[in-house]
Length: 120
Image (cartoon, rainbow, N blue to C red; front, side, top):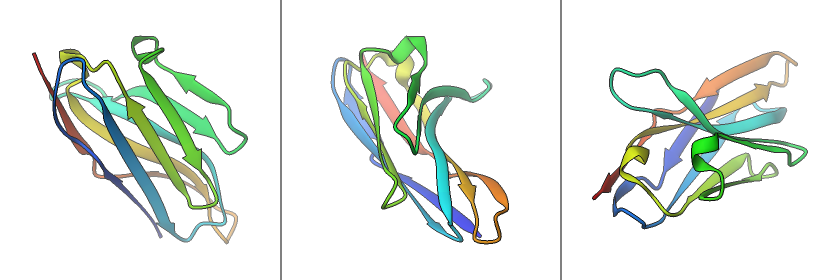
């Protein structure tokens, strides 16, 4: 079994910064990709940014130039540096890990989310 846990959410003023952290643990042979997703009540969960074990990154257009994803795959961890925060960035941020277990089975694991609230 694999567990993913996020931390670092909170309340911040518009224009401010936050850093989210995520760590995976458990039956992990290899993590292939880790990423962050955003969700507000009543809306679908949407991609914010992903990073592969090879270092390739992908960002939603809405966060390009403001957010930076980084990973420490030796520690099964991923981070999201959020700057220039806007009210519309408010919501729950979920960490996702695409994992290969020791049995060589693949898992898609989600954390429980961390709340980010940006005030105007």
